[in-house]
Length: 133
Image (cartoon, rainbow, N blue to C red; front, top):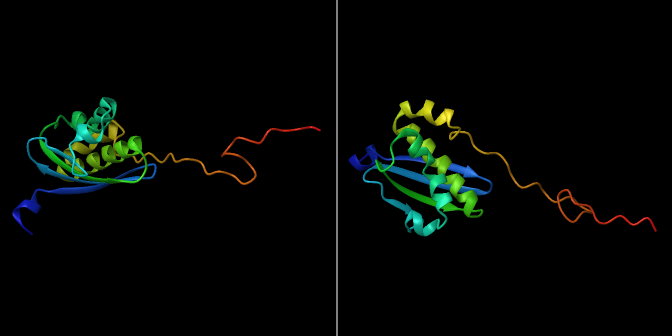
């Protein structure tokens, strides 16, 4: 194991159908999401704030360089997957972060998924219009 791998923490985050593999290394706060910067990949400021929640909860914003490979789902699901992966990686980096992240609810995987479409219906819950005659 090389010295660069010694201080590199990897974790997987999931949300809806999105999966994010997150790599943390001590650094200056550089972001690399699928080869692009954070603001370039997630143009909405609310999503950027959502992703950085793990760092703000532990007061480590700018202390780590983040490299992430994100796939599947949409923009919102990918942001949630990155948030989950970053929280898990921060716990691997320093176990003292666990209580802060746990109380903020960032270590729990959000299990909400899209409900499947049922046969004989136009959607998951919607029914075709009823006709008496």
